[in-house]
Length: 117
Length: 111
Image 1 (cartoon, each protein chain N blue to C red):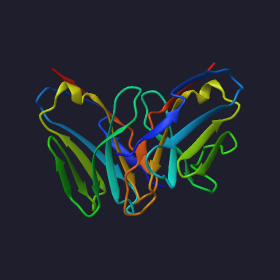
Image 2: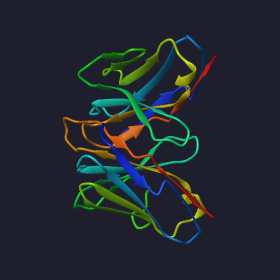
Image 3: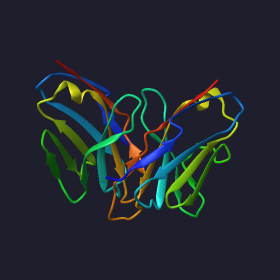
């Protein structure tokens, strides 16, 4: 099956700093990547959808200036949490899709645990 | 946008019994419905999925049913085992697009 990696797997930072999370599709080209956030004991909430070479589409309520998404290649998308605060502490998970209407499955990364002190 | 509801939020069953989790969705355009199992601190793992042109799908102890008219779908796990204990999420999407997840069901299988 398709392999998706995320880096780092966990990060602890001070309030006010920025954190970059990488999502890579290792053995396929992902035209579309999704970023989710999951708080403890809650569901995965879609933050944004990014297509290679174009601007990300953010879900309602997600600040695009705070959560910067770059999808520069077919195998890499990055999420930067700018000026992180304790309320941004969460489990961030990316997923990758071939982006074809006939192929629905998404492949999830292992997640990044962000803790903001 | 799509709204997916999932019930129950917690479910405890005796080992060997069956477990059923139900989801409803709001967008009639949704046509792909995956189910994921997530263990604590790990990525969701796809366990079964169904497309809107199919009413039922089965894979060993796991089955999913879909009622397009009523806009609901269900996960059925038979002969449950302790290793089935996890959080299960349903999702709905329109082909190739973003997933909208249900709120999750924490399943505990009691030995």
